[in-house]
Length: 552
Image (cartoon, rainbow, N blue to C red; front, side, top):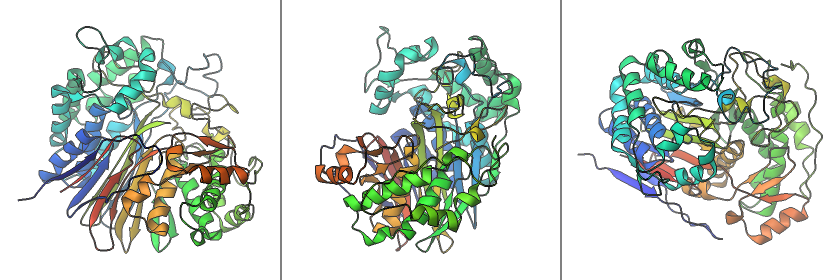
């Protein structure tokens, strides 16, 4: 009889030192996400004979129940999938409604792409999950919904993540959204209170019965459209019915004897991470002590240069992305030569790229699964900001994204994450906005050895890069790699962000002395699974946020 092992950590406040522990280990399959309930759902499917695709779908559905602020059916995402010998990238990112044009926001309120009906893109989550199951699933589609429906009907306890999200967003929710989080006395629910979603359970039952058509056609689609159009939004039922996922070729780079599979555009993560990894080799970062001020200085300079070309990326169906140029040996060498070991050097913005055609969040959920056969799935889903647009659909209580803010709605102005977007990311009908989501898989000798990703807007990219580096170069175990201090630099603004809970005053002082404008701020939260050289599967999560690591 298979024994069940569950390890769950409730994050504690970390004042100075970081406490490391051994990652959770298992033999058959491991899973890491930010939700204990979602991991429970995935485990039920695994114990019923499901494969990693089945487990991934069940986990995502449960996250839509347990994390309505970021994991809703009303969002979109990316997946990196290794099954057998093939590694594939799946794009189920939200798309702009058919009536949205480059000038759409010209006469709208400045926050129209963040709050309310004009912020919502066509959701892609269900189409993405359906595509994964259709291509790789083993169990019946309907069976994968049972744990999530049970959670929605019986209820879950409100956790810290949800409370923090509500604290800064409750006032911007529509009436349907607010009533979900009120008790019988019309007072806001507190941590530990039960939170039931019978209407969402009904939506899940329709999708369970009808497949993706249960979301994109019929009652659920009509509910989403009526919720938005009641506020003068312009999304249509045809917009939902026409939605399609895209299977893409990953960006692949060789690194430290491994193959790293990264998400291509419309993710910017793959290009930036590949550039950063190449720069670590040219600047020989492995020669310097791990976690030292000099190493962090180099990471900041490397990230700044790698983010510099992000502004020229966009949806490949609308924009010719200069990926080859940005990752060419010549470009990487030129960037490496601008990095000074002794001081921070600021570069001018990259205005023109040969061959580039000009046309172009903090809250996501990420989870990873790996099995003993060498297969792995790494998935990131998002609403963009916490609770997305602030709209919950009237009849089914589905939280709707505000992904339109990831487009260049106003050129040369930063979006909600402080990112300056380029012309290649400008709004067009049925176009996908640029994203920082970076689900990643690393293989060696044909088997997945590391799968990881994060939640946290553009800081996802720097987190994945540094965690990957810690495992492959620094030799950290998985938990150490996820808990270690990280820096973030996205070129603009020209600031080096650090998590003060992971950095000593001496390191911060040394970074400032090298000329960095150091800002103490939050960083992304990672989830990852790993195969050791001995073949043991292990999983871990970032103690900066809620999470759960599980296996059997």
